[in-house]
Amino acid sequence: MLKYRFTMLLVMIGTLVGTVWLYIAIPKGFFPVEDTGFINATTEGPSDISFKAMYDRQLEIADVLRSDPAVAYLNSTVGSGGPNPTNNYGRFLIALKPRSERKENSTAVIQRLRAKTSAVTGMATYYQNVQNINITGRISKSEFQYTLQSSDTETLYRVGPEMLEKISKLPGLRDVTGDLYVKNPQMTMEIDRQAAAVYGVSVDQVRQELYDCFGARQVSTIYTASNDYYVILECDPQVQADPTGLGKVYLKTNLNGQPTGGGAIAPATGSGVNGSTAPTGPVIPLSAVTKLVAERRATHCAERETAPRGNDDRSRNAAESV
Image (tube, rainbow, N blue to C red; front, side, top):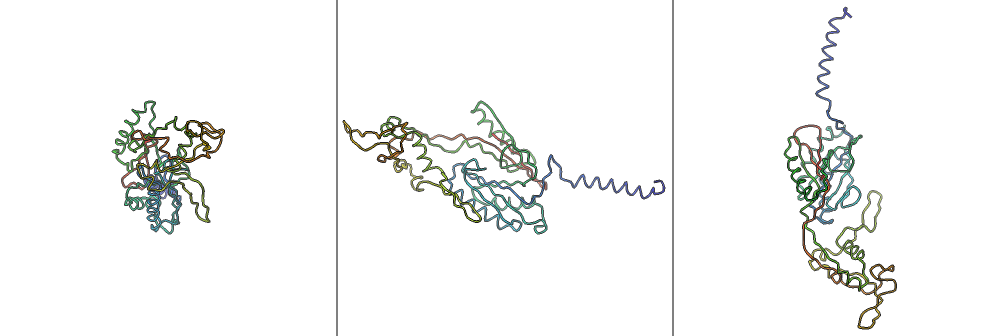
């Protein structure tokens, strides 16, 4: 070895330089971000958005994503169900072209897509690279999550937004978000149980009728060669937007239509609030057994999330869940 002292000196210097270069170049973190060629994107609209409005905006974002030269194809889901907890959520699975064709890593593609989709009014889009190894207990909008739990609901709802605001001010974070919805308007409805018993209408029947009209009930699925389409049942949009809409929604009663003494109508056999037969009697407006009491603010809580900002080539997300 002493015979090749100069050669060994060069090897040592080369090893030292290579070590320093690898320390700088290798991605750092618990699990370094990989470029698998796939990107997950979560879209979020206003908490009180309708399915139709959310669907239209999801299509607008899909058009923006397809126009990017690095995107090969994508899959889109919107509305509650599956990985989407509420109606104002949507998701994309974006497949990128081979690395040799796009000439950039997936993180650089995310930065460009984030800038493009931010122009869609009323929608926020959050991206994360699909990884081979994931450390998480739930599907979320971001890679990292922060969870707050408390037996005191009032304190939890008060502290949650405060924590979100403080986390959003931390350097290196961006796209701070969450799903604690405390400003969504909500109507309180009261069921007249005495009137419902007279008509033989059950509480569950009223609930199901309301969901059929104002919810997003999936009644069927249309399968094609490349896509699946949900068939959603709902009322006429004019009825949904009408404050007197309950008077235009009808449900069947459990009456057989036969008059009894005093002008009353006899209930069908086996009917009533806890009857076992299907409703077969005359229809009545929903307003006959229900009334709107007051409007209040809804309190729905789940998770809060954030993502990093800066020029870091590695896209990390931090999430606060409440």
